[in-house]
Length: 457
Image (cartoon, rainbow, N blue to C red; front, side, top):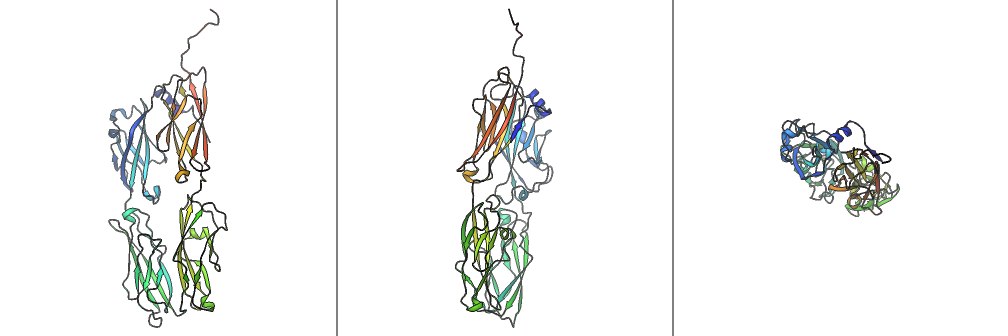
């Protein structure tokens, strides 16, 4: 990609006011916090005061705020120097379920030029109730199932985080089932019903239960799902998998047809009652079904869709083994597929021009542009460093993580060189590494620094 500046109203204004500007980095970062869904005008902080700026100089020094996201969620009142909420902030929309959620701002003032980095943490509020995948779930259970048999249930999800997403389950009172609640590691022990009293289809052919989930917010929010249990007359033994939980690692970008794992279940019954058909449980998400396929006869799970670490770092698959009895029984297991990251994303560069074109008498240290870099990969694959074309009177200065300033490093002479074509290279830490380049055209503006001279004395 290529960037060039040297014209336009903003460049002309910067040229007039920033001829002798010297880069003065702010002394560290400012940190504020604001709850999501705060109303328009909500106070965030006295940003001018905290930056050591007088209110009377905000307008003359062209005080302004730039957000990397380009959204105007926050704004500054130039009359009182207060940072306030300008538009609706939805934490889940902004950061998903990430534990950390912040808005990064660059505060820029002129005469002299100063740039400050401001971080505003967005606090979660309990604005999302827990939700089950469906409002009703049908279970078919044979009356011959022994006591303490377990029947897995799909838990609820909550778009909030922290205490607001801490879920507690309770089952409506009944004499047949108790509720097994998830352990701290839900992948090892999930939500399920435990049979506590023997079933008798002739006595009770159907059982209706209500499962309620409550989050940890204040005030708390709840969700429910109706459980309709149909008692069946069938088979003595249900299929049993070798393990209840399987974990497997899978590199991203593997080809369709790649084997993920081969599952095996056994059934003590004979004939059709002992033959097992493998399938994904009805609780398995559509996204998982679009990525994986299971062979109903062999139990092999294979890739059938594009696997991208940046899209999802893991998949949870609930597999069901059903025998072929006239009244079939089923067994279940959980497969956790952990996706391994490959270095498949090229670094991305973004530029913001501050002093282009630059006068030939500009002092050393003048900031030409601000540069931000990013990489969607994780770990070393996502760590990016920047370098600049050598043998030029400019240099890159790292200001914050993933932020650089393009700074004048030595004196300019337009009569010697009137323009520079700079190339910034961003390279990640992968092996092999990936890189991206961006070109920057820097024009040198003339000043009257040469006296007239006659061709001959």
